Image (cartoon, rainbow, N blue to C red; front, top):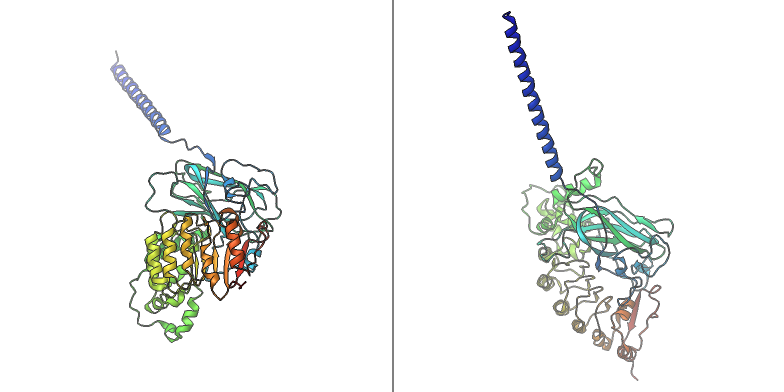
Length: 507
């Protein structure tokens, strides 16, 4: 046998063994890869989109219907559609109290607040609760008549059905746009492009502006689409609007969150600047006039630039008229505490929509009025669900010069609490829309004065809350003989009852 043959045999066997080992390794690798894929497949959740209608209407600012009826009320937004896709005027829909601009031009209209941010145009709102908290992917609003009133959609981090309320309630804007006029009153499904948020929600808030509408807008239902697990940002959804970038940068740079906004109200550490440029040469009054065009957050930001502007921004003259309604989601007890030193001369104060879900306490509200209430002439507290009898008592004691008081939609105030209003001798205008008032003792004292007295009570309040029964009507006709009012069944044409009463005539 040739010596070459054993060598070939050894090489062949070695080559065969290498092939076997390689094949075995590859098989194990494929099996491990297959196991890893199967394991990853089992670990990955099946993120199925959940579609749900509103389960409950939690809160709203106004509606056309009455409290003891279902016609044209906000409660029609709960559940599946009643009318859609039909178009027209149906009583089974949700309708707000006003439309167009005639409401602002009527004789009983209130003067607007100045320094309102241009981005805030909301007139009414409604808050809807859904069954399952989800990461929203879409919101469908079924509008059945004169669409186009919705201007903002927000999501809340608080679960209204949770037994443990969170320490901090966070609101995030999903979509916002200026009012637009829609051609035609036909029904439509409004689906704006919403942005993704980093928390699940089952509380959605719609804010509307009906100023461009020719008639009442009617909403039938709201559909929330979402997923249980936080979705990954896709190429399409990761496209960021430049306006959003500016807002986010402002939030980080200037701190527009609740905590940072409160810090801006407080005394800030200022750098030592040798001069203030041309501002040192301007008259104090001229600088004050320039700053009067800034909003409250802009004043807080400007106060951090130098000592001179800090002095101007903290001047109580800048806070004679103050509306905190546009910042309702950020205002809490700490905000009011930091504002106290700046609002000692305040005359007009708008706290509408603020303080809900524990943001403002009765004690915090009382402390603020104790410092800032002596000069108050006008106080707007619409939809202030933190208000109770103690708050009304504090208002009557600490606001002796109060002439206008708006308590519309403050449905948490007990009926007996309204007796405290009789102590406000200077009161000329009182709005009690959607309250639990049962007696109008507040009219008794002012109507006996020599000067004229205006009591403005909305028509809905007269009919809904049982505030005007037969005995009170007789009392009004006897004690306020100059009383004139609009017809009780014409709330669509006359939004409010305006009583103009003078001193009772003898005989």
